[in-house]
Image (cartoon, rainbow, N blue to C red; front, side):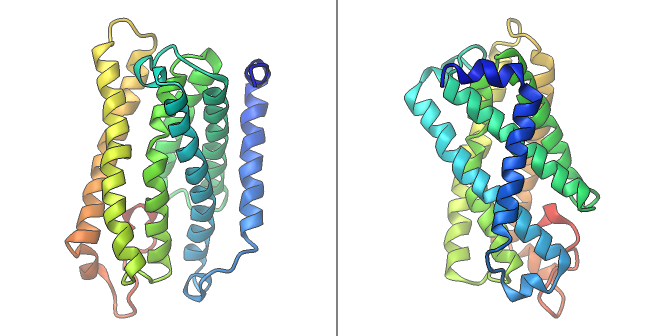
Length: 257
């Protein structure tokens, strides 16, 4: 694997696009799986379901991968700026490809307007990850940032259950508690740790202003999403916006789910 990093770096754009095509292939493979009838009947729900199916594959893969990088190399957590391993570099390259694929899927299917917050998030992640890949700095920071994918597994499952009108099931009930715990520990925890690290080392790190700006903006977005999540799952806010058929009057907007 040691010889793989120079190859990926020398052909970085092609490497990222290659991984994007891999996830596009996953998208086509998953189209053969059955979809709940209530999802099939609505074009937007159907697109969301397929988009989330690819996302949950990425989350399962990168959640395990990023945590294993930290366990195998504890310096990942303490030398965010300079420490890297071939395994970490490959992970960040693969994940960048996924975000490129997901952003392309949102734009090319005509859902950019209802998913603009995701596109903003993806643009910042792709920019930060691309810089890390091209310079081989902040690779460990990108790995820590990917800890959020542990929460993304439960978050995507939550959205898929809502799309299938299964938000009154026991699975949804159990998942919503696990989702909040993983949101705090792995999403907010990882983001705030990186923010704290950059703040403490602000004077000696290169390109720190750009990364710090992106982190602050993403932190704000994560806190807004967390508030929406709590209101939706624990304070019954969503019931007020449900129509007689049980679907949300604001169902055109992805990020309010």
